[in-house]
Length: 138
Figure 1: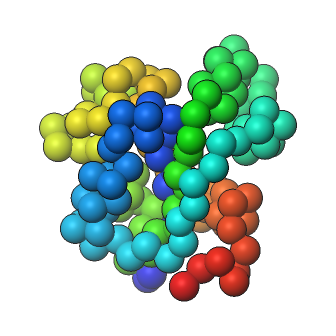
Figure 2: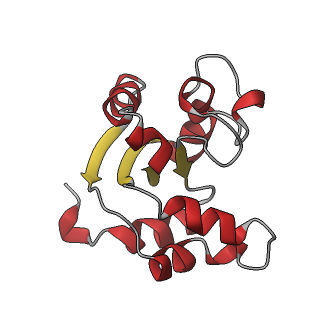
Figure 3: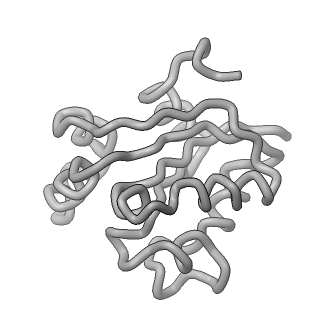
């Protein structure tokens, strides 16, 4: 079944000039790009986006980090997109990610791990709606 999911290139990867390489790999892996934008999140936007983590000790550092530079959210489509993308990008901690994964190749540590992706269908709907309207998507 075709699904839509969100992937966001984080400030470490955009700052290192890796956005294009990441998009190219996604397309080569069979993900169809439906929408793309670039922006710098305001603190309130970052807090809202990562609100599920607000009670965790790493939340303030996460918000500081994600607002430190440009992010590139995009909507991707493919059969079983959510699970396929999560497998393709690799483990959250780049040190534990499989060789050849996005996070292994472009991430530095558990926070500076190059990309964020939706983890479930409900999350994908919420996260896509955070950045895009239906008219934004091809």
